[in-house]
View 1 (tube, helix red, strand yellow):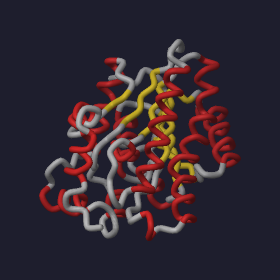
View 2 (tube, helix red, strand yellow):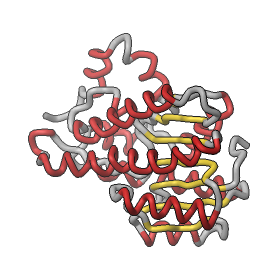
View 3 (tube, one colour):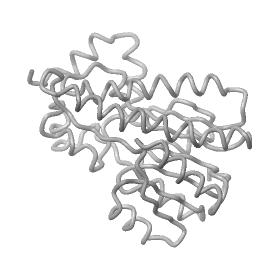
Length: 259
């Protein structure tokens, strides 16, 4: 078991990867706190195990994040692991998406991550311990039509985490940036209609569509091995090939995209 602490804080815990993390850690005896604006979703998840606590929290509201994190630290215990999963994943051509929609997505996916990270990290730095896990995406690496707004938020997240990990490499905190490919969660449905064509294709063929359980398993393995950037499943191939053949990967990814 890779988790050596007691309290885990998970954003986006109402469904998908966040929920899988929560249930796994709860089954191992951890005190798990899940945050989300989906009150029904986190209530359903917390009802599965007595050691899962559900708290409504809007990650885009820094004051709300600070209040909730302080409550967890003061009433439940020191946060030994933070897993940030909260995100939205809409698709669409950039010239058909409003500037307001792009800004809103950046606020949720990037600013929300920054709010949580820079609220939780000082507690861990003070203790010089903890697991600090943030979900980025290969969508922030590969140029993908109909995924421009989402990809930009994940590119920002990826870069932020790489710098954050480098700046804190002398600490005992175990950092990990997770860059998954397409994952079989409810999040993917947000991009089915207007997003990249391959998302519809893989939901039919199931080819290269990974399960959230597989992703969570790789997170634990990478923590144990000290791997700071995790590319689960088919993402490993993108990590290897994209730096060498970026144009080829872009053509392959966008082959079926209708523009």
